Length: 418
Image 1 (cartoon, rainbow, N blue to C red):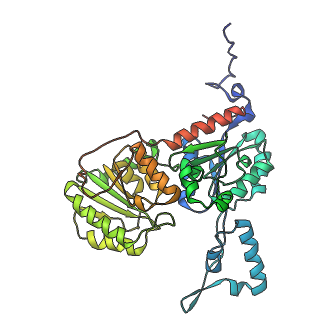
Image 2: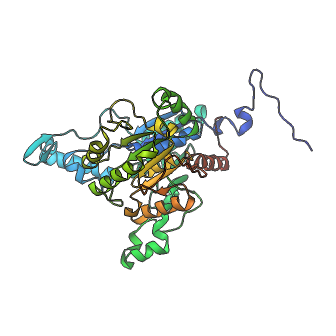
Image 3: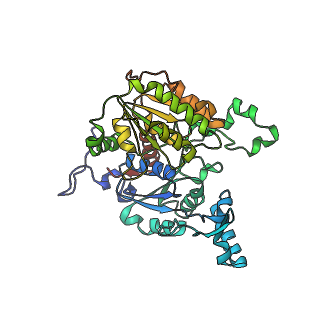
């Protein structure tokens, strides 16, 4: 028997929301819960873009007190951190608490972040309930440790009105979220290799403690906004500056040392020497530093290449050329510390060389190993001919995660507005 297609209301073309599971089952908007760090918030916005909700999202942030003694309390849950700040402020007075000691100097600082739309779970949950009949379900996308309690509270307060996605592993009680999106290397502690590194009496405290469940989406790297549409737009925006540069264009992205990927001037000097060795095969080189790059690292490269006509070093002023570099580069050299920069570059299908991977430890060593096994990166040795290209199936984590979100929504009878 052939299915009967109901007539569409006059004046409306295509399949209407009513015939797609009801007017209350279509997700038309998203709330992004951020922590003020670009690396975390870009993942949320990238997923929202991949779901087709770009321009229909609102950004809220979980603000943590900053400056002075607060910089020593970042390990606390943000709610406890705020209460402690208020308690100490009442005891010692605001004037005492709002200073920090730098050497022999005492300088003022500001507590918290001003001008930010605070992520209040009660407010967001009430908004989701009150607008459900008119606007449909609310998609909530959060990333970062400080957002965990807010995102889980929203789901607890409005379970019938929201779909909550937590990006990056929340460590415990993953059933607080509809979906968790996290890199595979976050589960490295469960491997036999990792277990051998952990003293037996500490194993119960190292998370995660169990394999990924049905509501966990595993990725290779980080989600991001550098999708094909964004790169096409960046290629157009940066055409006049980058299209005419001599080829091949080598882009060098330098992050900063971390607890699991330590380096300093020694790696900077090594990188400078290696770049000098491959410069003959490059038409142009563009070097960018991140906000985490120590001055002692960037200064070495600036001294080495600032007078070289082939090399341009972005000084951090003006428009950030990062997306333009992704669009126009012929090859990349990237420090091993940055999962985000590597994930973006490996989504282009262009050659990506990594420096410092041997310095990575724990799960970040596992991440580097997974990239090399997939053939998406190669170690930078300084003997390369940059004009010789190679390719691989690009990473597509953000688009694949978006498909999983749509599938999970469909299981609840919901869909994304086309």
